[in-house]
Length: 289
Image 1: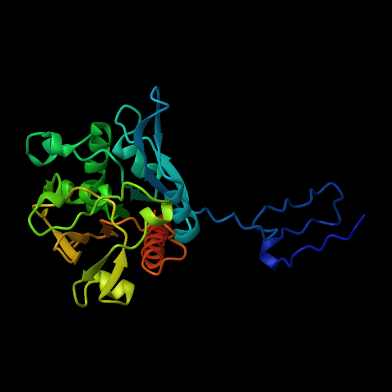
Image 2: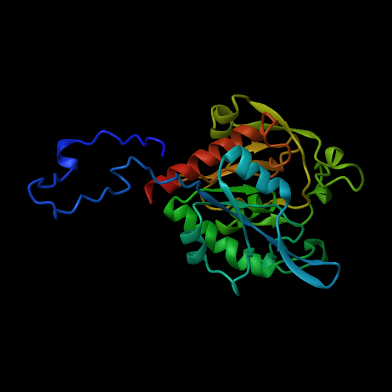
């Protein structure tokens, strides 16, 4: 039998048996006495899923592979896809199960009822289940300090959750660029950098990126109209479209962007610091609860 080395035990760690009494039981060595540490748990990021129909008949909740990749490999957290529907989960459930949230992009738009405007064909498709989860979730996280990162639709949700509104189609506005996804091309071409985003001098994003402006992709049709309460627009496209924001005086991480930083997040010099900072915020939250 191989020799098993035992750790050094301090005088107070070991109850010595009475050698004069052979029936005295030997002390039990607990896991801490053996020097075993509990494995460190990676914090969990709830990735807001989108409902859609697979093969035109099978309903699913899903999120893009690149979202999970960015959360796992750059933020350093466990990605957990959330079925964003109040029939299945509640805001309280999610805040208890997750340490932070990635508010993803998605084809459906926030319903204009949520910002007091009538529905029109220009507003496109909707996902009222997601509206019912993400909007109150954002407000609850703003209050509690639980971190979230908003991306594309998620960026728009943060503005709406804080009382703002959206333009249904920004390319129809005078002087605006077409920010929509290119209709054709490879994934690399669809997610290619297409315009500059300029940050407020000395602002949160400029300090995080170490740059006054960066190049980003653009794959959205809607955009911020009325700016919500406490929303700080910290970056804009050349046509004035808001592209980066945060919630003023929120106790936690609330940074949100209109572009898609999850694409090539490990290598992109703009995406990597954003997901790294988000991961740090999620770890800090997990360590305090």
